[in-house]
Length: 294
Length: 294
Image (cartoon, rainbow over all chains, first blue to last red; front, side, top):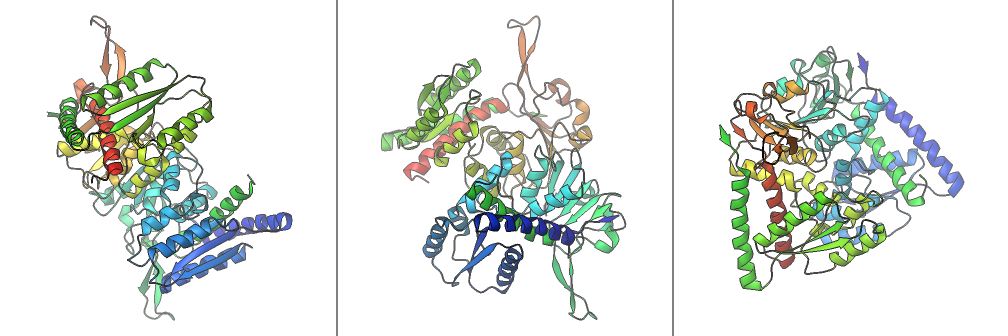
């Protein structure tokens, strides 16, 4: 059994990015710049944005946070995006989600210049992904593709089962893995809460991807011997007797499934760090496209 | 066994469209207008465009064909699209494919105003389809969804297997059938030439969709008893002794598979007529969006 070490892999990629960014700073005297819009004061969103900021700093990228009150008008938010779209010094532009309910999130995302949409959420970038064209891939699926690539896990012709069909994980990952590419060329089945015979389908997977959002959902009998298991879930569950009183678990019953899998991602330290590094890869790409480095 | 009569269903939909269009002509004195660009003199393309023209006329829609020589410059073609984009009297705009090799087809499609892209080929419209937003669906998958809807074939929770991953049929259909919608909510597996165990996967399908482009590819043993079989293929094969010397067949070995299927589309007269009518539905939609009819 091989533990897929997302933490280590992400650290390696960050070193690669850091060296590349340092080169651009030496050569051009400026660095990739990620700008984030943060609306309101949601604690989780604050944490996520702080992580993104520190990730950027750790590789030498510039960041800026545009804060808006939770009562911001739609029109003001759209104007802010317009302003940032036209600022040539900003290469990547993200809007931290979720937004307050009164905001039309689709209109906000549609407003982002696709060339700066390093979250890969803009419809035109999703369409490009479907067509197999160069684009910004959404962070979590992108991170998973990098793990498969770097661990040399064969996907061509394999049965891949994706549990969950969210717009940011299950759906784009299913599409990416079915493209004529490497990793890719897989036979992909996307399951969800309404899928009949889900357990049997999962048990037939060469590569099983759990992105269903339920702690311990994937049990031993749902995993084929020798399968690769990628766990996208991250949940805080009570753990009496530990110092913090809780622990982090994924969508997979790790302790038992680890006995059957050939490759498996842990939680934490699997997909999570790769999701974070994927945003840096996209920001670097946006910078290179803008500055004409190919 | 129920034969899914695409010819009859398409004729019914055309009557519905015709009545609606007649109402707009009475009320507003103008009709939906589909404009097509035809480059070169490819015989098959000529036929397809002639069909589109006659389909439009038969429901009271206006059509116009913009012909360009096979040597047209990229820039001239893009200018033509620009001109048509800005013509308020044109509601739907299509470019007949394939284009001559010297033309960058992606740039051409990107140039079409997404609001007029009634082929549903523009990346932003593909992205909207992935997100489940209102958009123009590509004609063949749209036609198949209409057949499933009108024949009340349950898709929710069912195993759907799509053979083929083309950008215009297999891929969009897989996405549509997995969305939270009706038809939809299916467990979709997309197979292709590199899929291992393709026959066994097909034989497990409640709904099997053949879009792999090989005459008679789907044999009896690949079909579960009581399955729904949708045949997207259309091939001209030699038929000695017939008047024309050929006959049309699909990707399915119809004569044998028909004994096992609960529902099946014939070739011809199944998916083909629905593909044609889907373009009319999209053109009608473009007209209604433009003129503010909801």
